[in-house]
Length: 554
Image (cartoon, rainbow, N blue to C red):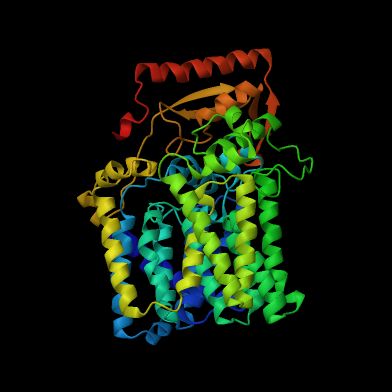
């Protein structure tokens, strides 16, 4: 907890300094302390993304970046900006920051933390962005700009990967600065994303910030669109936000097309990044085929697509069963999934219908544009993979629009305090959550409070692995655990080893002497097939010795 607060004390001035630099290039969409901070996060993320194509995001990148920001912070006397806050405001910020830091200090429990976030950050800090990395592990082809931002600050300043907690503190500053009290009620619910560098938290936070600026009638449409494009770059399921900003610029502000160029450049950078790591412009969509030699094997992509369809139904049906659904069964079975996810699907549909009716009644141009954007996003998600985590932001957005005028400071602080206490109780005594809500699977991975958390955040260690070689690739596999969060690179998840062998292919280094040059796939030769079978046999033997997959954590 204390180390998180210390990181925030150092990073916030540095981000403000970078915000001052970025504001000289792109006009900030909001003013004051929050304006500098959002510009700093935005600017550093883009700079780190460009650098990652060429160099690893190690300490040689982090230290100069942090020092440059701090230099501009003091050179431009940006600390005076805090004078705009009253003592009461500062008290609320400190109280919220302490709550956030404490909640963030618990063990990570989101599974993507182990299978996606940490492995991605390890690759970025050790090698930078690697061409065709999705051939090694398809999940790594996503390489969100939020993991890039975290990687660039994870060597010294934030080695515990709690950048989301610092973002929540920045979000608090924005809420207090703008007196937009309804958003203060959202923070307790976002505490569940603060133990990991999950991109879900920043896209929810940033979308609510942009939404507030649009509803206020912000005339800086170019800056709003650029920031919305950045949010899309973090997570492409947020396509509705740049779409909304574009429509707002076109029909409400009526700004010139040239004002949108910075945002368009960011979207192009997003496509280039994906083509470099994945081979296609948008992960995990394998269209259009640009003929790049490092695109993943078609059979691997087909397996991934089947898995996405099964995830739509929470893995409660086989792919063959889903294929044989009638149109009515597709809808009915999605609504009536066992556990909490079926209830979330029903709630999502009801809330969306309520919002459409609200929009028709209000006849407000901005609300209409918001509704159109949300509907387009919802249709895209439903067609692709209708998992609740892809539309969780919609709940926050609709609640915000419906009730923006009904919350004052006093009510919001009471709600924040009450729900923060509830969620801290769940984090401290997780058995309550997985006893009464067993279908909430991440709850079973939560761990109890430990006194050391008051000083430093809790993290897992699992430095147990086996090493193998197939063709020219020497790689490591976590022993008796499906993810490689603490395994030396290059590491492959055991699931992808099975998928590759079934497809008759395996990743190979493009240049045996230079990992940064990336990976391609090649068909297995008869000799390599025997090597691959030995690897699979070794993995299976490890489980036979101890069938408890999660024994390390139970």
